[in-house]
Length: 205
Image (cartoon, rainbow, N blue to C red; front, side, top):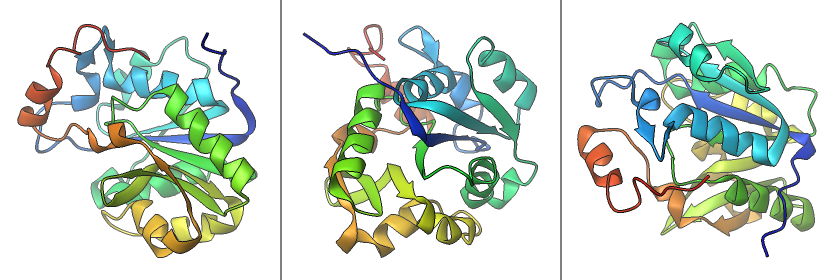
């Protein structure tokens, strides 16, 4: 029997959804998968793990906001989205600086579920490490939970450099959680076609 998810009351989620989708050629986060847009799937997964969720949008901000209607999330716009992912990360963290920890979620990882995010938070809490991050193959990165003491390092990032940089710099002290699903992202039309495999119609949350 699957136990019901218990959203964490203290860890705040920051969902990064302000990419320009240049390689895709259209707003990728509005594409449907499993009956929902990638954006809504990411927001709902974050809500399954955290009571407090901030979603950072950029281009197509109005369409993005309407896609999240009825969800109890704070949607903020990153006017500097052209700088790269670091600007979106800073914008989101600015809304949760009072939180003991932040869960950074990438909206273009559709196979990452609320269960994965809850597992990360659980490992973070039990380990006592300053961060818990997903591992997939030889890579580490988002989704990842960061203690507040690491916020300054995240806020210092610039350009198209994301939270993965901080994970790599603290890899020796990080609690790593195998999440092979985090390797699945959607950046190109080819990625999208690959995602439309047998799971496309039955993808779960």
